[in-house]
Image (cartoon, rainbow, N blue to C red; front, side, top):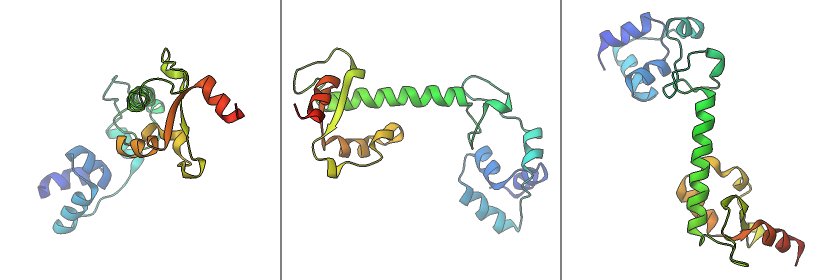
Length: 161
């Protein structure tokens, strides 16, 4: 990194994280170069927001109230759309991985009516219910402990039928 560029960011009130995002590098890299050049950042978050307003990289939204958490490049609405889409893609992939139909009755009309049933409850990952952000590798490991059944057959299994 160039010392003059870092000094410019510091003068504009950028934090280490802001510099990292702007330069497409990690915070550790920024900290390394700041230390090497003997520089320190001033983190005036409110001033930064005034100088550099947020803008969603997907839809162009600029209203600060529409952003949440540490999401600086995507608004809440686009983030929700993305995670919903990703969740559906993962479910399709998981259903296909387990055969694409209920192993008891053969039902395969609606993917939303297909459930993953753990054959051994004691080996179930307790966070499986919120699997939306899981990697395919982690999801596959958990699916190997499951069978694919339709909602009706799943209820019958739990009812002891």
